[in-house]
Image (cartoon, rainbow, N blue to C red; front, side, top):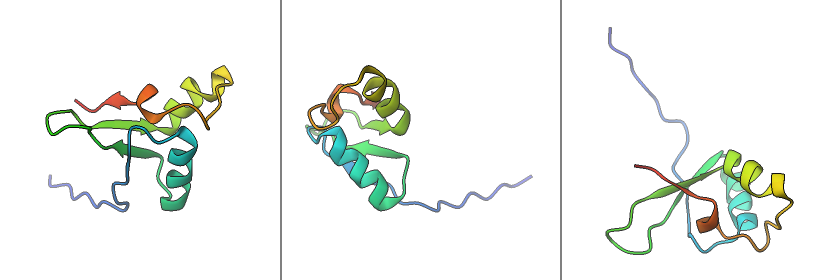
Length: 78
């Protein structure tokens, strides 16, 4: 059986030094639930930050999304 997959959303990238509040704004703007995190150097892995990361690593601990940086809560993709 052949399965065809259609991508309906584009990948949106955020800088690792952006604030979580900036990441939330991007998620809202593009209607996505996760963002790719730009690597700093050519040999750095790509990472991801998701809504769940924000909820469980920022909101649950009453951390300020205005001061927490994306690199503090992101996860590697590989």
